[in-house]
Image 1: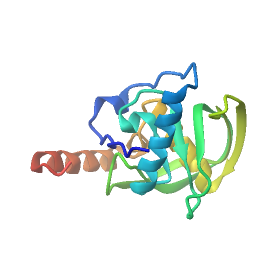
Image 2: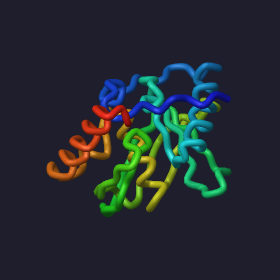
Image 3: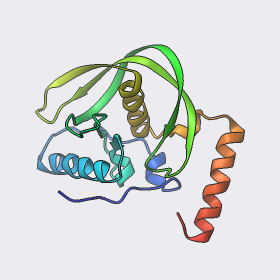
Image 4: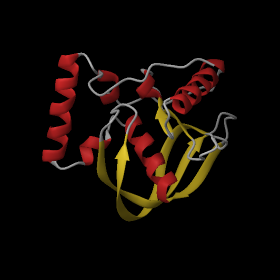
Amino acid sequence: MTKLKIKKYGDPVLRKRAEAISEINEGIKKLASDMLETMYSAPGVGLAAPQVGVSLRLCVIDVDPNKKSPVVMINPEIISGENKITAEEGCLSFPGFYGNVNRFEKIIAGYTGLNGNRQEMKAQNFLAKVVQHEIDHLDAKLFIDYLPDWKRNSIEKKIKRKKKAGDW
């Protein structure tokens, strides 16, 4: 397994809609494995392929504090959602920045597993939020897109200052 470099806000790959995966080959399996290692070491609970510079519809998630429940989602989609709630979110591509985002509390997501079988996941609360966040990455949508203009502008100004100082 290889630890990959996480792309930060401003990298164009984060604003490009990811391509569907048509074949699950050894390269896809290695990418998923490397993404899990990268996510765990970050540390994080979710990571989408565009965040490591690969514009493919693949994300990895593990909300288990013991890091023993990894889920690899290929070509994931939200099938249904209910009961919107607002909760704080952060993102590995925005280290140190957080904001309140309105998302479904309960979802059903469809995806293909590494074994090639199509599956459905029922998720609620924190896991539902993470799945929605990672699928947004695949659609070139970032958590700051949900924030009020003043909050998003504030974060973008701080990032611009960090870039200028060489801290981004």
